[in-house]
Length: 194
Ligand code: 5GP
Image: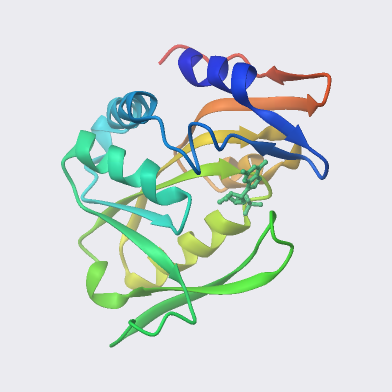
């Protein structure tokens, strides 16, 4: 998605440890026009998948899920990092090794929010090693629902989480795929027209 790539080039900052900071438009301050277009693009790319629900993980997936949910007119659910006291009832749980924080944490979704009849679209801001995604896939598996698609804003291809997920046969769409990144610059993988 050209608009997203241009924003990454003009405002993204490459930090030590291979972290791309995009907090002026994606995951701290949120640019409503860009996110509206991201939501519409996911709605277009997954239009044939019969999506009934969107799933993401707090905190930075929530804005992406909210705009996609409006574009697709289906509800979204976000997995909570546990320790949260206001979860109750049956829980679907999994654990994530955090790339940005370098520690493991548990996530949970109340079972009543995902049913075997659901066709779920997972969305998130970044895909790096694929740990967050795998935890969300495990939660969907426990619920009996089907994962019908995965929409990622920024995939860092050199960390290979995306390759693994594609090999497993999932319909994964990333709007900007970074092939290489350093303080000198960022190279994107050309995206085929769809
Ligand atoms: P993964 O689990 O695929 O290794 O990493 C995905 C998660 O880590 C995303 O949900 C995102 O919050 C965070 N993350 C991974 N790489 C980056 C990055 O370069 N920049 C930012 N801001 N977050 C990242």
